[in-house]
Image 1 (tube, helix red, strand yellow):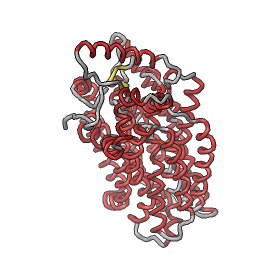
Image 2 (cartoon, one colour; image 1 turned 90 degrees about the horizontal axis):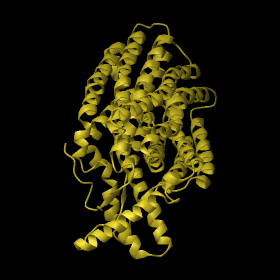
Image 3 (tube, helix red, strand yellow; image 1 turned 180 degrees about the vertical axis):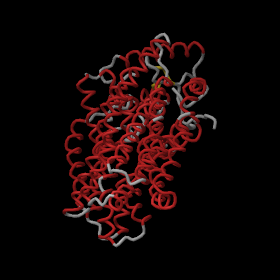
Image 4 (cartoon, one colour; image 1 turned 45 degrees about the vertical axis):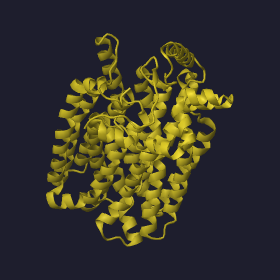
Length: 519
């Protein structure tokens, strides 16, 4: 795969002091005029670096409030993806579902539409700004979850689950872009850790732990449809807090609007040609932005291989979610409510990894930067990824063979804790992303000019496997057993998860310098 330009709409870029590129006028005048225009452009960049409207110059309190609001938005989506997992047996009885693939589809179709939504939400946020993409996504998400709660049959449930995933992708797609807007490179790891509290609580604690616990007892006591009312209520609280507190953070949109406010249309169109372009040829410009995540995924080998690893981990993660009810109900004879408690193992591993992983990533980055004469590189995020990659196959083998042997129920739960620690040291959701990899997410944010599109490309790819893996999970384990099936998955994790990050660490800088997609 080779790197190529993002599209036909482009502009010259002036470097920000930390490497971020901002739009500025193209220099098409004569040599003398070009020098004058360049000086003017440099002056404008310098002024913007110290402008109070620049999100990186906001007061710290305003930055952290914005980060907290985005984190709250990202809490809800992963919660919706997982909270109904223990209630799948109750759902099967409610709608008369006998096919295990259809039953798994009610859970994983959310992840499919989520992947599609990511491809739209991220580029839309880079055209129209982050704020209203986040707000509208959350409000539609609330409405579609109410539709899930009121569904009368399997088809209507699948339709509303699909639409909910589509709307719920907005916070995950835009969240890391907001962090990139607000913080310099050396500040991002700690900021990303705070932002990840939302997806971590959603995917790493409430998602795989408290969410299924709540969902299991709700399904057992009043019915599985009430889990969707809980999700809608949380979305409503997020909207009440987020709409008045959240402010736009995307720099090109802020500068475009500021120039438009002073009615200097010539300055607006010349100073920000790319943003002005979509007002003149809206659909062409929107198409360029919508295809950007696909271009990043297919024409940047680094983005592709890191996304492939994220996708594999997320697929395995979601596969485990759909097989837990069968394992602990049929082998260990747990009720639906008690069966939800078994998800705590994954959540415990995620929490430990979040606390440990952020510190590890920061310390490694600071150490390697100092060793490199104070110059940081995105590849300095990769050692934390390599470290976490060793725990993933260990956790899978522990979980699979202890379940195969029908050992004490705590043994497979311990295995899921090791697995959870491993993938969140590599993968934080999110960010996925929500299960977005903290090292991978930071690497993508540091590397690519369009940070939201890069993380959206990775998240969309991982969500496609998150949709597909549960559909064949029951059949695979029925054929190979829990031991053999998890051994196969562990083998894939070793082949993809260990050699490629090592290769990126040593060769990544050379590839980036030749790429037109990188900063």
